[in-house]
Length: 614
Image (tube, rainbow, N blue to C red; front, side, top):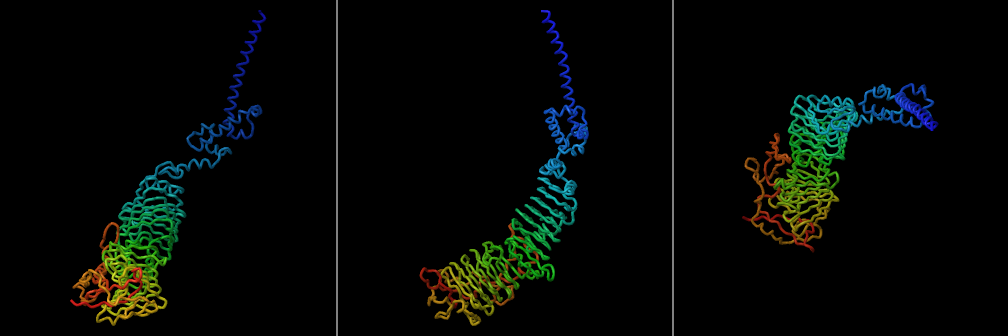
């Protein structure tokens, strides 16, 4: 028994002596791990001079703990929130020297600030002043302004490669020149808004840089001059998305491209002119532009002799723009349609020029807003209409009126199917040369196809070799001559070459077409006469029987916001009012031709007006 007690005491003593040793070993192991964790990033660990290193190499758990410590050190450095003492007394520079801490991770973490509105590269502060914005621009990179509005108290120059997203740059009256100037190598504006004040000139000046626009809104309505956008000095601008430009009375135009290039292929341009001479895009100095689906107007002496400008003009301002440029002596040489155009006022061509279609088939459409007017009126020699169509709206009169001028038509379609009363073309004291195909489309209210009126001087139509006349529409006469004492001043040349022939009454018709020897007068027209025609006003001081076109095209600017009277249009407004159909004061009786087969008009008939007795 005593033996058992003694054995138990010995066992207890052995256990008591062993446990402290184990605890001490555990403490020593912990101490070694702690030292190893700090020293692993130090230079001493690299030399392998740590005490007890040989014993630790056989321990599998130690490398795992050390690896986890590496990750902690990496997070401290990239977040920048830890004190260097927390990383074993090492500085951030020492931590970055460790191969286990990749350099690029630090950059990636910092750049996430770019995705926060109002935060720039390597900065965590919201940008709400011009000084902060300029500091961010100096750093370069991406600047997200979000919905921030930044007032510019001085001109802003962007001379670094940046991407600016969102935000509104608002000018103040303390800026007397251009508000924002871009001079960096590559700059992107992404849905940026710019607003000028009364003291500013151009809102955005793109000077010799490569600009990409992904949506842009500029309010230039209060500016003292200039334009919403000026692109020059060899710059190249690529516009995408919606570009909204609000013009003011002092705006020269929407976008000016001078000795530079601009691409609008993927952009939607919205600009509403408020004066007659404002174009949406203006090119000069050998500049180029692509993707602008607006009508081109080329002037040879705009702003000085031999100073060519190419203007892209909105439909709402086309008639007014052309009239104003002609009055200013800008010398319009070309009008080119890049799409179908709908006018808001009659179009007067009062100087020698070519009007053509880029596709060979685009049309100039009248509108009910024009009222009882002719769609296009030519009042000058040397006008060529090439490959275009002209169409009346229900409220309009004739499609084309040539007044005391010499004009040429090549492959032209005149559509008078919808009209308040008129003809496809009126040759009023004028001569018209027809080349190619002349298509005449008539409606129930059409008086006829071509009215040749010698009242205001010799009148005639010449069909060149290879030309052809086609006609379709109602049963109205298509070509007729105003009879009277001046009938001998009418000349029709080359009718046979155009497929016409004379009938028994000496009128020209389409070959093979018979006419009614006793045409029936249209019902309800017995007493109509010329009562619906405007007469020359008394203050014209012109012969009583002289007809002149009424030029109402300069009274409004055609803007969506309402009519705006323009100074400098007085000359155009004083043009004498007169009938625009070529009819004289005698009663007008229009004969109906016999219908063939289906009852549709089969050809072109040349009729003489019968005199009436009162």
